[in-house]
Length: 245
Image 1 (cartoon, rainbow, N blue to C red):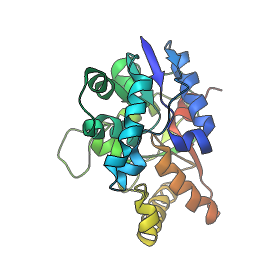
Image 2: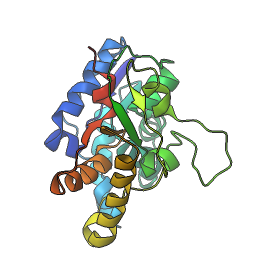
Image 3: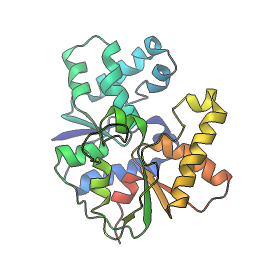
Image 4: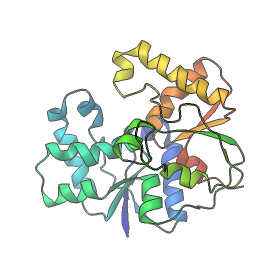
């Protein structure tokens, strides 16, 4: 298969190690990965702020960069959700439909397309999993506590196979962290309070490392952790899955 690697803006600018870990992990699993040099933002920030019409150019550039690949894989549930569910603002040409249908969040791609749950990682730490809203409720990467569906979690399937890793149970395991993109800018006080609540749940559960599949949420919590000098480390799930002793 021919896979196009999509690296979101904030990972490219602030957390390049996550992009590198994603690339290395996919290559370890035997995937031939290409990185389109012309890729830019997927258009999500504009869309989330109510300016979807102004995001059409960015969306179309995304399609042009990724239309030739069998799959598009990215380490971000929110950005992949935007591609799959908000590119309906474009004319639904065969290229647009192909890109929307073949865009996958990294964990989902590994489990559902490659059929792999044990990636050979080793990470002897107590880990708390943050399930981002877009990934959980948008991409259906797991079951939601407010529904009566049978329990499942794509991210947990991968983490449970990591040698030495102890996945710690949380009191409110699928609650929003309060980031919400521009919500954290326009509703700062509410966003901060929600983030602090999520962090305390991890602390109360004995977590050493918070992980997740969406680094925007992790970035929000990491900022609060660092500001309050709390004893927690934050790592994207790609970094953990790419770790070996």
